[in-house]
Image (cartoon, rainbow, N blue to C red; front, top):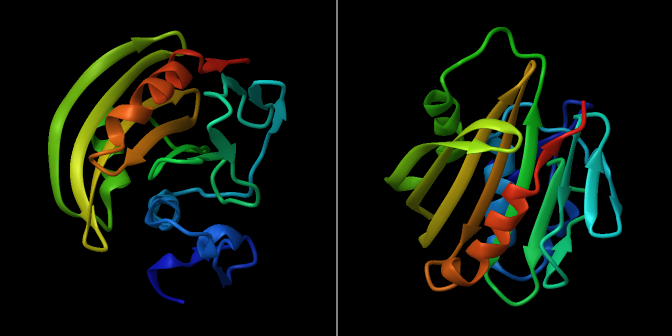
Length: 188
């Protein structure tokens, strides 16, 4: 099935159901998620305008009606914008042995991309604790993208909050992503 496949808990490769939906940004979400270690079935629930994941111990406000939750995705939470070429993912990798520097952890988000150019990388203090924000320009399948990510370590888990969009759509969805990040909170 190629690089778009996601390895399931049964060890077999599967294509997520939403790959056939229009828009290169959905395919991008699959690529980002397939390279994240520790992918698992969606674990959490939407309650009003909140997403709560008791298994991974966090809650986050959803950015609004323009963003749609993607069901049956390997990330803990995936959102796509109804009108923009943009997406947001929240993924969690747990049971890590020891702690690694956040800049090292952020590198795995760009596996599979070409011409990665880090535009900005800086430590951030979030309500959920210390994080590393990275903004990069990259190419995937001949498409230029801008990617903004926050990497957070909490207990034995790494939390990846990622926003990706075409360069023309990036500024129009970025505020929604930043609002989501400021509302991200650990519940245990």
